[in-house]
Image 1 (cartoon, one colour):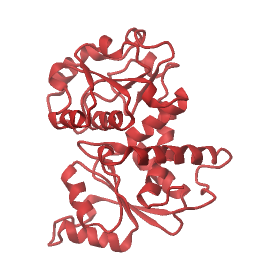
Image 2: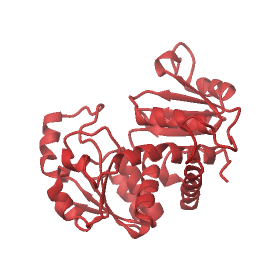
Image 3: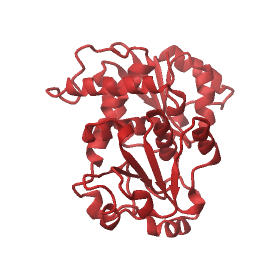
Image 4: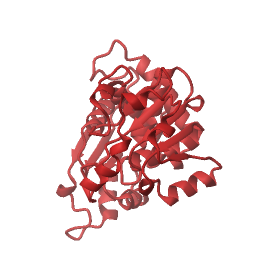
Length: 309
């Protein structure tokens, strides 16, 4: 049993095994329908419990499909329907109940501490579907997409992030250390990555390049990443934040400073941080990116269950 909570805590060789397995499984499904199970049905008879405390479209749907393709069943429970520390039941007791009924627990939450607390008491693997400081499933899938399109290791590419420093970027930074790729970040001065993230990078003898100029950050990039500047759960001043990022919009002018065969990726949902012509243009690979979530998440589940081929 292995938890999948944060990319920084998973050995690089294990992350590479997950990507290799995902590639094989995707290739083996070319003639399959969406809910056809994989021939080996590696998780047959397993019950995966999912809980979403935050809104979700791609993660919820992609994991539902992934679980079914592996031959397992899933149930989604609402946090409001569980005790979770209320009514006399502790989180530890809830974890024991989940461990009794299910074989795996997937959690999308607004609390990193809650994931840590669950991991201490669960007897089944837990997978982080998103937390305030991490979005590991999204970013590992993004690495898969980059390598699939570019047909080379991401370690040989220049990767650029334009936008807010959030949980997706934290995981991308972790990936840059694990896979040893060059990462440029373009963001305003007051939005740089938190100190604990940069301290971890330094501890691992890697360097992240931060620019307060989007053109400098994007120069000669093979891949441009972005995310919504103001998410649904942001509690700050929306107008001020959008104003701060007004010069960081990803448009055709910005894409011209990247390499000729560069691509654009976005975890979705999108906002004004990207122009319509870029988002819907030839360089945009966002739909392929979204679909690949299914394939990589299958291999993440197999990793957590100790069943990687």
